[in-house]
Amino acid sequence: MNHLHKRAAPILAALCLAGMGVQAAASPFSALMTIGASAQSRIPSEALTQVSQAEPLPILEPAVSAPAVDGAEAAPAEPESVGGWTPSGSSGEIFRRLNGRWAGSLPTKLSSSAYYLDPIELNIVDDAQTPKLFITIQSYDAAYMLPNSWKVSKEGTTFTFNEGTWEATVTLSLAENDTKLAGTVAQYDKVYEFELYRMSSTPDIKDQQEQYLFEGEPPAVWAERLAKYPSFGTGSDTIPFTYELYEKEKIAALLNAADFANTAVKGYSSDVAMMQALLEVFCDRFPHDGASGMPEQTDVISILNYADQAEGIECRGQAAMFSAILRAYGIPARVVMCLPYTDPCEDCHVIVHAWSSDLGQWVMIDPTYRLMLRDQNGSYLSIPQVRDALVSGQVLVANETAGHNRAPFSMEYYRAYMTKNMFRFSSRTNACFEGDNAAGNQDRLLVPLNYQVQYPWSRPEIVTTNADAFWAAPIL
Image (cartoon, rainbow, N blue to C red):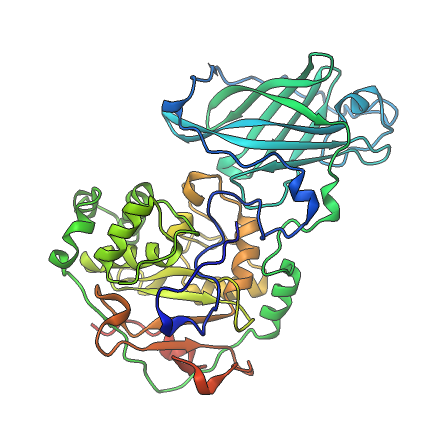
């Protein structure tokens, strides 16, 4: 989902020449993968169909799986019952019948009462040693996915994909002289019927490609750069960050755009719980569109009007609006641009840093992914804590509602993407509703120790290595 976007504010142009916002618009079948002709063999992009615009899909009772027989495994010469994504055993008749490229539309649930039809492609590889299944879904972030589990029977195939709350189970049977696969997908306690059709008897063997590719380089390259520069400096100097709070009248149009007022006054166990509740309302109201760009005027109301006209907004606009909503209800919050090692860069990402008075710390919020990360102990994480976790390989836990425009959330992809982007950080000193052109606003760029800053004589921001000052608690 990589789209190169124009800059709205010239002062930021040197930070990331061509890109702004998460690599996410309508489709991940794009420059993110950079896999040439093989991408062209996928099913063409098509408009997503809302439930109100399509024939209703049959909703079935959740399937009940038969209990597994202890110790039962597939014999090498009879691969009719196979577990794992690379089942062992010689290729039999069923694999020869399944071998090829299949395509159709997968029902993907948006809410309790709505779904859309998401183009899906399966590539099943009849290999005598390691039969393979590659799953490609248009709205997902990966060039392909591998199933969590995979079984093949005389009737067809069953597999699961996604993780945790988002796990889905697909059961398909061969039909119409092996030209169709018909069956169901079970996800979120619902079961839908759907069909796939054989597009070719020759599968696209995708493990010769990178699953993710950012600015033409695989995640391992970005991880190596991040690990090479793990540390920032300290110091006694300060950065004059300020926060305009409780100015509801200035953004009344934004606050009236959704149920923010009623959401904010409900009883919460902590201010972080209120942040999460406001994030849910915000993401329902303002979908992300990485190709939409930004308006010339970057005050919050101009961004609101632009987002409504474009029916979506890039990550920078999302972060500006959501941080303004938090500040309107008294939570110090500012926009933080996450930048890669490369300078200039093709793409970066913009998120929100919000101060929790209850926790006495900053909390990272990513409106593009409806995301607030925690560690394995359940503690919310700040931006620098997430960066440290990426460097050290620590576990990151997403909220159950996380996901780009309600698509299932992939932690694997997000870690790879943010490993690229969490190298250095930029933020304006005045977190206010007026946007880029507020009087006295300055850009501060935090870079790791020993990083060679490119073109320092022409940079629009003040460069620092002092993480203590950049991430200091707000002075109110």
